[in-house]
Length: 111
Image (cartoon, rainbow, N blue to C red; front, side, top):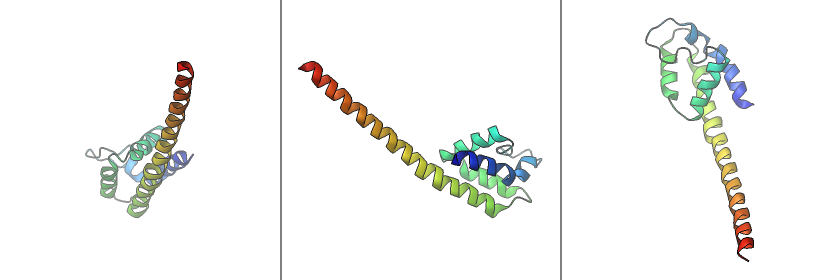
C-alpha cells in the first residue's frame, strides 16, 4: 500500500522532469505513468541509482529539489531499510519453521 502511495505521489512531484526535453536525461521518464512510477519505486527499494535519479532531477529547471530529495530519501529510509528488513525477517522466520517441521518429520520417519 505504501509503495502505491509513493508511486502515485511521485507522478506529480516529478512532472517537470518527465516533460523536460533533454537528450541527456537517462531517468527522464521514470515517473511518466503509474507503471514507470512503480518500476522506479521498486528500483529505489533496492537502493539502485537513487543518486543518479536525484542528480538528473536537480538539472531540470522548475523541479522542486527539496521535495524531490525528501521524497527519495524518505522512500529509501521507509522502503529499503525498514520494509526490506521486515520482509527478510519474515522469510527467515518461515524458513526456520519449515526447517523445524522437516526435522520433526524426518525424526518421525527414523523411528
